[in-house]
Image (tube, rainbow, N blue to C red; front, side, top):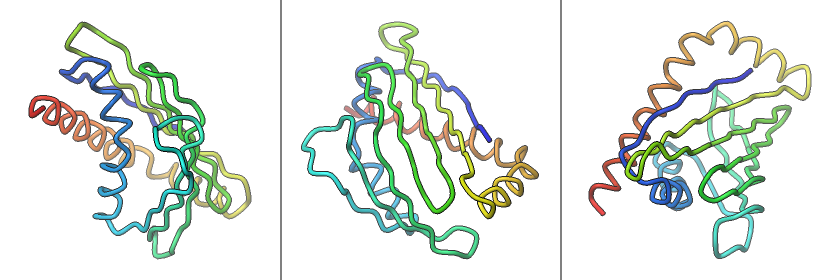
Length: 154
């Protein structure tokens, strides 16, 4: 099952990519939402192999996810692989410079079940795909607005 959307950000492509590489911001945001997250690599700079272990509550159960950066093509693309019990999720973020001060951010999220219980979960998500897609697009639009605001403050 795949979700995808795109948003335009009033910031240069290099600035947008640097904001995407500011992993501490994402870690703090996840913790504010109740997730336990810890870095599992020893890299000092973002790149392929950067990884985390996260635990959070979803649908009444505690879920654990291992996240790893599998593609790091500065300043064009970043791919994160998320593995949990029975699910493989690939999150792809692609950037395209529309002008010197405007960047298009394309975010896709592909969920693949690896076992029967995960298939049932994905099937139930498919039934709610319309509402989930609206929420997904809204969240990405909010994130793009936050990036614009961060860029304008800098």
